[in-house]
Image 1 (cartoon, rainbow, N blue to C red):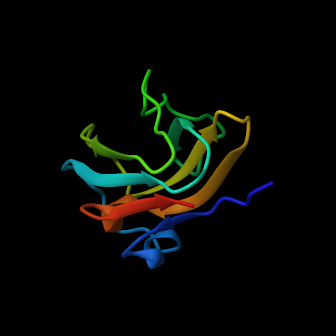
Image 2 (cartoon, rainbow, N blue to C red):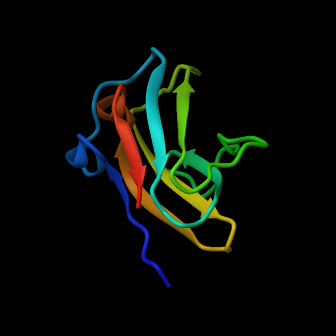
Length: 111
């Protein structure tokens, strides 16, 4: 089975960066699916909780090789969140402590 990694194209350090100042403006980034599977769900959640927030994709999916423009404009209280991506084959990946303030304006590539 293909191992999938979540990496920020120009900001690999953003995945492990320490918490930054609270974000109150919209965070925008481009998500690219570089896997051979369809990405069906994308969730973010505060590291301090065991619950995932609602699916960012809603009814959309992201096919292999496709990109998706994401804007999170709900006045994030923090910058650091955990991320989970689910695929149509039942696999999922999770990455802890993604700094969305550092990610803003960049590309996030799922490989």
